[in-house]
Length: 236
Ligand code: ZN
Image (cartoon, rainbow, N blue to C red; front, side):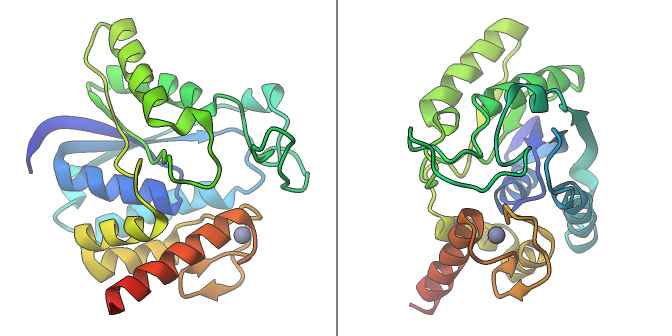
């Protein structure tokens, strides 16, 4: 352990936030998790959260004592201010501005503000999120400068240091699989394949090498391509 601070991980039960959770458990003295229930079409994500936490406790005894409380916030009010495929039954399609209509404007800014208030109460001084600039989606609230500005705003607004860490910011999806392999070996990657959820359509029927999902939606395509590139890199 190289860092005596404690962290709050924004944890959805997907591949990226599970990578962030492992990264934080490897690094910080104490780690708690926070999730947001905002009327996702797929409750499956929220169910995966608990399963991933349980499996990490069971399979990684060195991390188990550091993994603390989970906080689930009801953000159903987001349904009132968004109009997207995540909260309504619409097909996922690109909008005229180039952003997928799964976009909830500024969603990550809201999540970070709520997470920071919880972290402050829990005496946690690091927020860890899976935001990533190399994603296909180009969400402006996932960009490095946006998050650095948010760190500054939160630290000033709370009058307490609040560091925002984004370990996946400049990684490709293949590099994310490599990161989790370096943190927890094949055991961690197998846990991610088996227990995390990424598919936009909420499908968990079919099990692929890279996990469960429809295999066709943008999230599945990205996850599959990343996994295949990771395996190809490893075979060298
Ligand atoms: Zn899918």
